[in-house]
Image 1 (cartoon, rainbow, N blue to C red):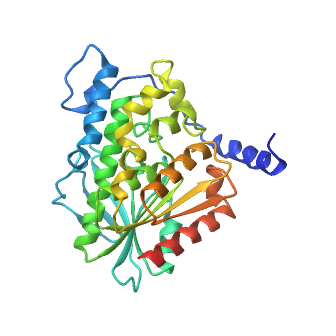
Image 2: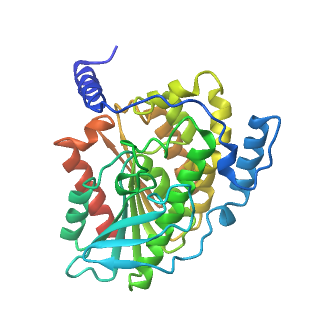
Amino acid sequence: MPGIYARWINSWELRLAGRDPNRRVLPFEWGLDWLGEVEPAADPPDCLRRYANRAVRESEQFFAFQPPADYDLRGDTLTFTSPVVSPYAENNRVYGRYFPARRDGGRAVLVLPQWNADASGHVALCRLLNRFGLSALRLSLAYHDRRMPPGERRADFHVSSNLGRTIHACRQSVIDARACLEWLYRRGYRRLGILGTSLGSCIAFIAATHDPRVRAGVFNHVSMWFGDVVWTGLATRPVRQGLNGAVTQDLLRECWAPISPASYVGRVAGRDMDSLLVCARHDTSFLPGFSKQFIELMFRTTSRVRVVWLPCAHYTTGEFPFNLLDGFAMCRFLAARL
C-alpha cells in the first residue's frame, strides 16, 4: 500500500498527464513502407524482427549520415536539412536554438527535450547551462513544434502505433542530433556533452553511443527497452490502446530494439564518456523497475556512471521544486565532467 506522499505524487501526476486535450488513439500499422529496403512480406512480424536484428547488428551504418551542406545560423536559430528524408517537408527542416555562453572554454551541450515539448521546452535549462559556463544547442526532435506536418497538434508521428514510422522517426532524431554535434564540432567545440529528457533521453543515449566526440551524457529518465515504456507507461497510454491486441509486449520489444538504449549499452565500455542517469522514484511512465535494470546494466559495463533518484514522478519532474533539483544536478554534472 503506497504511503501518503506516494499517493499525493501520483494524484499530482495524473492531473498533469490529463492537461492535454489533443491526445488521440491512432490505428495500428506495421509500417513496413517506412523502412525503405524491406521487401514486402507475408509475415510482417518476422519481417520487422529481421529488420530490427540487422539494424542493431549494423548500427554504425544504420545511424551513419552525410553532414548537411546547408547549416545556417541566423540570430540564435540554426537550421539545416535533415539527412533523413520523410514524406513531410516541414519535418525535413531541422531547427536548433543556440545559447552561447560568454566564456565556455570550448564546452557545449546538445539538449534534447521530451516528447511533445513545444518550442519553449528546456529553454530555461539551456540558460541555466549558460550560468554554469556551458554553451547549449537545443534541438527540436522530428515532428515537434515547427516540424509538425499541417493539421497535427502533437508529435504523434514520432511515437505511435505505426511501428515502422516510429523506428524511422527515432532514427531521424538520432541522426539529426549527430548532425548538431557535427555543427558544434565545426564551430570549435571540442568538449561536447549531451542531455536528453524522456524520449530525448533515449535519442541522446543512442546518439552518444555512436559519436565518440561526446565526453559526458545526462540521461534524464531512463529505461531498457522502448517497447516496454510504451506498453506500460502513463504517458503512452493512447499508443498502447492503438496497438489494439495486434502485438505482444515481447514482440514490440523485439521490433523496437533498434531504438532502445539497452541495445547499445555495450558501446560505452572503454569509452572516454561519463554518464549521469536521472530517475524518478514514483515514475509511472518510465517504471522504476525498468530504470533499475538499465542502471544495473550500465554499472556492469562501465564505472563511469552516476545515478540520481528524484522524489517525484515523470511529469512532476518538470514542476517546482523537482525541476530545480533536477536542473542543478544535471548542470553541475556536466560542468564538472566537461
